[in-house]
Length: 476
Figure 1 (cartoon, helix red, strand yellow):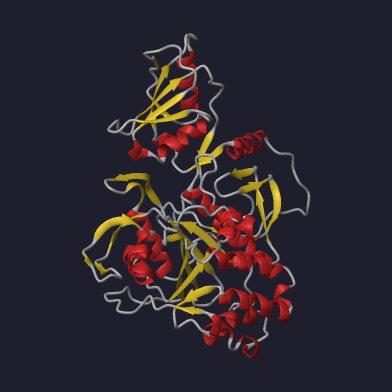
Figure 2 (tube, helix red, strand yellow; figure 1 turned 90 degrees about the vertical axis):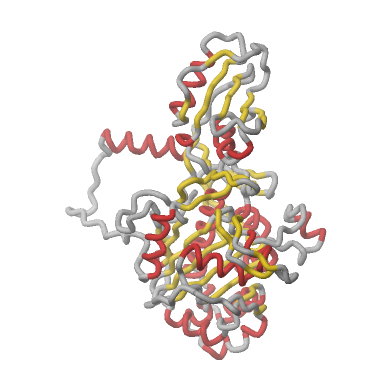
């Protein structure tokens, strides 16, 4: 596609698809959604570490066994006029009912509740496509599967990918360690960047945002650098990319050339990104733990828009200001707005909004008024506190403790992000309300904010799913 976009043509692209791994995810599928205008791709990133050596797993901090599941799921829609690409991120822990299927071992299963990423584990690409089509009502035309190794190979051949972050990012589990500002990521850093799930209280939603930012950066690099105009480099990039993926049999050289020619003038502004609207990001399900429950009504409207081949993002109108380049001093309202934006940027992003979390504060020290101070600080950070702190059974608590029901293990990450260093203590059957026992180590409540899963105010969609274009996905 990249080769054809540059105008190099069929001669250079011909035969490249011979190295593509093939899988038929559509075999035997019945009762599928009707096809619609444009093309719909299901792009999955698979957690398959078996293809990496022990040394590679250590280098890239990929410890543990492979889950043989989808680590990332994205639906990519190319408009019929090939002038727009819409990327919809699907949370990996989405609560679904897997359709009835036959396991690879021959065992037949009726529909049962699960997380969407386990569809690949139990039924491979076929069950994954069936599950996504059933959830979205969108007909999948093509399937592309990327592994850890193929992802890193592609980053290497691109010569790295630039990203921007407004705050330092450090996640010991993935190995991510980036300063604030601009960075050019090599393959190892890029993999850590798109996989990191332990940055403050934000796991999946923050990670989906970074994945969207990364894709926007790749598009920007491909369209703004000399890669597209260098046939030899293009051939190298395309060969590496195509050798590194698995695709359905219908995605071959002819399709690549046709798409590439149609998308010759593609730019970052031609892409748009959104995440599925969520009703409950910490939805407890017996046997599954915490899952992500979609807002079905709003999600339906989002996918209706996609099927209708309409834009998801509001296209910006050119500035219609008059009178040349003269500017004006910012008003008091503008300054307050800037201050609010700065405060929001400084706040730690979390998956679960604090106003969804009920908190009871107990003072575990002899310091009078500390319970009220903590309750007020948490309420000012938008937590739903009782407003009536109490004294703990002991007044010699050294370390602040958060007591919570393990069924709400996502929500507790938000509270822990606001109280860094607090000890987590499980109490089964406690329910959604959490208890903060303030210890002598208490310093302050850190501001937190919901990691923006692109949910807010798109009235045209009738859904809280605000899409942004690729040129707007800059620093996060």
